Image (cartoon, rainbow, N blue to C red; front, side, top):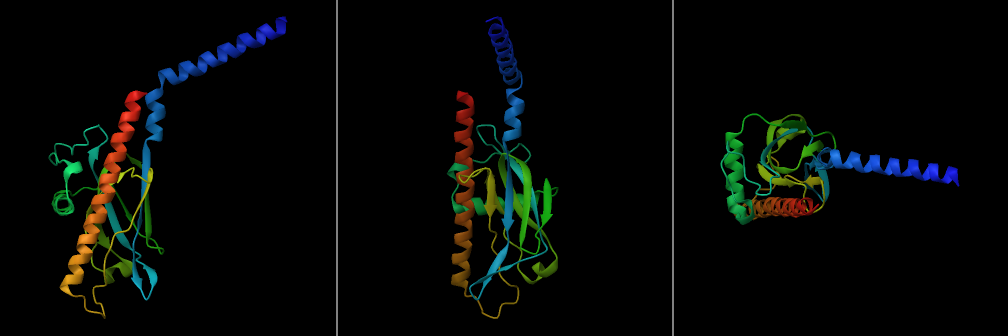
Length: 209
């Protein structure tokens, strides 16, 4: 009986220490969990097959924090991402791409046309193609776009920037180009909106805790 009481005593002490640990370091634990990644898959379709584009340099610029309101920092002005349409999103992406000079992080696509940016803080990022090497010189520069990390698919976000060959054997009509531009704009806007809504949802859950 005495041994049982001793074991119970040590068990209660251990449980108390665990509770105190989480009580004194909750923000530190959450900070490690609230990071994500962005993987860029850069390729074109040719004869029904995906042709990866190697040597394309992409740069990321964080333009909004996860602060509940998701406002762009004072350096870039304030924008209401939730109420932007595709055209407004495309315009803002171009404006920010011209303003921002120092990237938070950059990377170059590999032979599979992929580059991953791990350990990203949650928020909204501008993605901009900042260089062309390898076979990427044969393709147009991808349009800049905004994307939320995390998105509705989780903290590991995947995006697919679009481009076209600089010297295409098949001429593209103006109507086709306009359609593609609209599709890409809508896709970028949808990804950003999903990310913003996810962050608001996550913010609400954290506040309840």
